[in-house]
Amino acid sequence: MKFLRLIDRMLVKIEEHILSYSIIIIPIMVVGNVINRANYGQKLVFLSRN
Image (cartoon, rainbow, N blue to C red; front, side):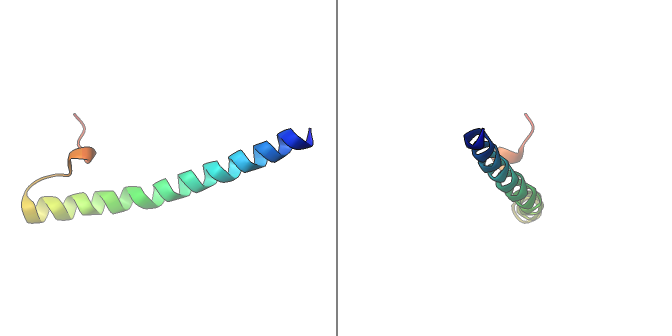
């Protein structure tokens, strides 16, 4: 049981890091897309919803 508890804690920490970094990165990408569109008239390819 201790082994499973340890694995569970490790997975929770990994999940917390992934979620926190993604929450930080998403607004940066949105602002970068707005700046790119304002300056160059093009959107970032990986942010388009095709």
